[in-house]
Amino acid sequence: MRPTVSVNPHRWIVFGALCAVYTTFGIAVAAMSPMLPLVRDELGVSRGQMGLALGAWALIYIVTAPLAGRFIDRFDLGWSVALGGMSVTGSLLLRANAQGVGSLWFAVAFFGVFGPLISASSPALLARWFPDETERRRGVGFSAIAPALGGTLIVAITNPVLLEWFDTWRDVLRFEATLAAAATVGWIAVWNTVTRPTPPSREDAKHEHNTIGHLVGSAQVRLVLAMAFTVFFINHALSPWMPTVLEELGAMTPTTASGWVAAAGLVGIPITAFLPRVGQGQRLFPLMGAVLATSGIALILVALTPGIAMGLSTVLSSVRAALIPIAILTLLAADRVTPANAGVATGLWFSVAEIGGVTGPLAVGVIADTAAGYRGALAAVVLVCGLGVVLALIGFRLHQTLDPVHEDFR
Image (tube, rainbow, N blue to C red; front, top):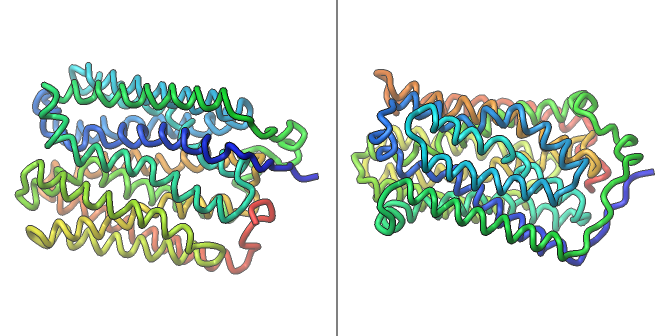
C-alpha cells in the first residue's frame, strides 16, 4: 500500500517558521557579497582566493546533502531545521572572526555542514504536509522566495545602513548571526507546539525504495540532476560577485552597484512566486529553457552595455531566481520520487547541484584574475546557460516518452 499523507491544520504555520530560518540561510549566502572589497582589503586575499572561500560551503554540501536527506527521512524535520539554523548562526560568527583566507574558508565551509538540512527540509515538508498539488506548487514558490528575500534585503541595506550602524564588516556579520539565532529559536518553539502528521513508517519507506540507487535508476531523475549543476553554477557564480562586477565594469559606487543587485532581487521575488505555478507536466522543461536563455541574454547585455543599461540588464537577469523552484518541481514530478523518499531525493539533488555551486564562484574569481577579467567570467556563465538550454530540450523530449507526473504527486 502507498503511504498516507495527513492534511494538517498547522501546516502553514510550520512552513512559515521554516521559511524564517530559510530566510537567514539566504542572508548567510549573500552576507559578504556587498562587502567583498572591504573583506579582501583587510584580509589581503586575491579574487581567486576569495572565490575559493565563497564556494567552500557548496563544496561541503556535495558530501553532506545526501546525508542530510537520509537524516530528514529518519529523524523528521524538527531536529533537521534546528541544526541547520545553528549552522547558519555559527558560520556567520566564524566569518566575523576570520583572520585570513584559511580561517575564512573554514568559516564559510561550516555553513555547509548542517545547512543542507534547511534546503532539503523544505521539499520534504511540502511533500509530507501538503497533499494538495496546488498548495504544494504555491509552497515551492514561497520557499524559494525566502532565501531570495533574505539575500536581497541584506544586499540592499548593508552599504547604506548596516555599515553605517556598525563599526566594521565583522560587526555586520555578528548582527546577521543574531537574526539567524532568533529564527532558529522561533522554529524550535513552533515545532514543539503544533500537531504533527504521522511520518511515513519504516515499512512504507522500504516499499518506496528509499535509496539513492533506486532514484538514479530513473532517466528523469538523472536529467534533473544534470540540470541541477547548471542551475547552481549560474546562481552561485553571480550572487556573490555581481556587485563587484558592476563596480568594475560599470564604474559604479558600492552603494549604486548593490542597489541595482537589490533591485534585481526584488524583481526576482514575484518571478519566483509566479513562474512555478504556470509550469507543470510537459511545460516545466520548456519553461526552464526559456528562463536559462533569458538569463544568458541578460548577462551578455551586462557585459556589453554601460551605465543605466547595465543596471537594467542586471534586473533582467533576475529571472534566474525562478530556476531553483522550477527544478525542484521537476524533481518532485520524477517517476521514482515519493513522499517517503523526498528527503533522500532532495538531498541527492542538492549534492549534485552544489558541484556547480562550488565551481561557479571559483570560476568567476579565477577568470576575473586573468586578462579576460569580469567580461570573460560572464562569458563562461553564459556558456553554462546555453548548456542548460540544451538539457532542457532533452528533458522535454524525454518527458514526452515517459509518464510525466508520478502518481504520488498528482
